[in-house]
Amino acid sequence: MKEKYSEYYRKLGLNVHFYRKQRGLSQEILSELIGIKEKSHISKIENGHSAPSLDVIFGIAEALNVPIHKLFNFRE
Image (cartoon, rainbow, N blue to C red; front, side, top):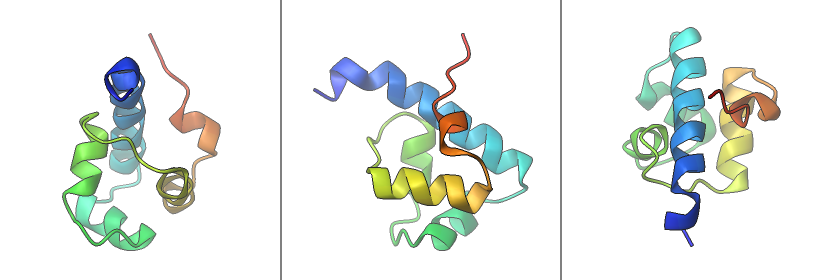
């Protein structure tokens, strides 16, 4: 099932990366803000190599001060 949605994960990751950079946060700081112990998890999300849980997605949106729908606003 993951392969079926891999393009969506990639686009979600691009948006996370964009808003994280816009806020001036490192991947490590963002992971700490949302309580992710594995520091490389944000990198995996941003590169589309991870299917984050809803809890993680909500945490990212809150930490970045971005409405959650912005993370799913897939620009073509």
